[in-house]
Amino acid sequence: MGEAHIPIEAVKGRGAATHLAHRFSVDAREAFADGWETLEGEQAAKEGRRLVTEVTFEDCRSALSHSDSPDLYFMAGLNPYRGCEHGCIYCFARPTHSYLNLSPGLDFETRIVAKRNLAEQLGRELGAPKYVPHAIALGTATDGYQPIERELRLTRRAVELLHRCHHPFSIVTKSSGVERDLDLLAPMAAQRLTTVVVSLCTLNGELARKLEPRAASPQRRLRTIQTLAEAGVPVGVSLAPQIPFINDDMEQVLEAAWQSGARRAFYTVVRLPWEVAPLFREWLEVHHPQRAARVMARIADMRGGKDYDATFGQRMTGTGPWAQLIHQRFEKACARLGFNRERDGLDATRFRPAALAGQADLF
Image (tube, rainbow, N blue to C red):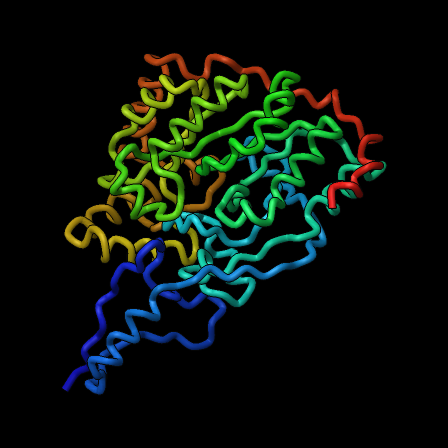
């Protein structure tokens, strides 16, 4: 008699459905029904799926992560947290939890690591004698304004430091929490020292709750764009990721973002490196089982027949007819609305390293 495998079910408020084993795991486990369950046991199992976010702390040895990738617009990234409670199923950073011996699945969104000494370490790096200022991108891997930031304020401390020494930086977020720091962002924007990009890949609230379960709703993000723009902060919109047959409202997103005040826009096609591919397959099995094979086939069409192709120049946009179609739609919509006509960069000449001497009063 064969084993009866337990079907994967959605976990309320979470993007992943399982604690998928990471790529360094020695053992792989799969749940199956052994016939010994009781009603009480089944209920206990359901109760156990109400996962609570756990936060641990670490002292980081480096605040900035440097990159020379030709696909990226920044040279240095700043991420106050490892893991992200927003739980976006498509997040390319999920595999980084494997280095912590944690699952890129549910662990990534429920076991968050906070870099408690981030601002202090950032001050040391910016104050180094050989440091050359260039724009820093905050939130490149995980969102600096995820829910735990309300309590820990690690992102706030880093922004205060950058504000003090007039260092240019940009923010990428899908959280309305960025509005809290307008008292710092608005005066910096007036000096061409900061911009904000709000990530918004769909206006469909029901879809967003499945793709990005603990992020702000699409309409709330549009309000954030408007609030930032009205305060004088240059705002862009990121339509990342574009997923064939899943989010198909690119033009509507761009139009809504333009009306709210965004003036720059960019996109990427869905990226499925390492463990993200099986996690995304699980997500499709749970939420879109009838179109799962078609979605993965179109993704493969844009990735040279594979789930993912990391080749520079192709990993963000993909190749082939489907990738070209997405690109053409994006370019035509941006041209019609007026996006990306302003090309002014951030000003690194205002950097004042001497102001870092007073950083101790941040703590």
